[in-house]
Image 1: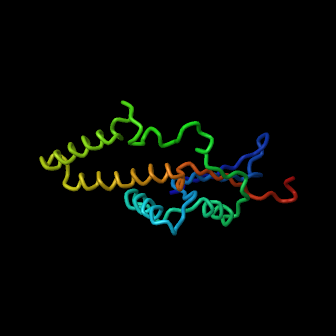
Image 2: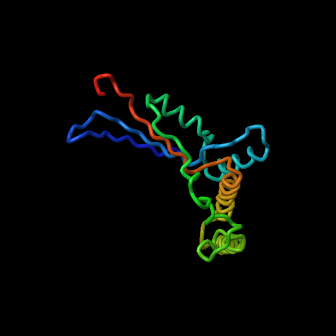
Image 3: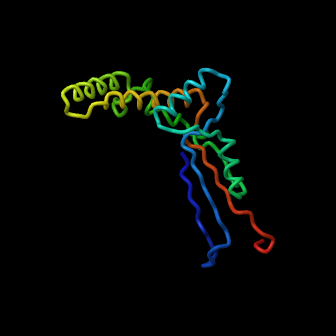
Length: 167
């Protein structure tokens, strides 16, 4: 999934001399090996659980910006410089009271409540199955991030190439 935007910027009130586009790729394959069965399983979990089409690699993200006519100014996984992993708060192995719902015990309790509410017909039939699908994606995202084959913070900044008259 790509969130992108373009901004027309000017200098001292002049508008239109520089176009910029930025894209943040939510799930970009960083060190993904298509020949590794474990990597393929993680990718399938994320795509199924997140309802996503084929997830792009970081190289494909950069190439898409180039194909759209932009010159790449900056491309980086913004999580690389972080002192702690971005997924730490949602990692079931990292327990804290603020992330109790993501712990193994918290997930078990949540699933039991959802199952009970569905059985009592307080919530619609299928909610328990939906909870399981979302947990599949959740597991894939955390595992993929832990193994550094996935990033959710890949940022690309591009600009429209300058013409000779714009220097």
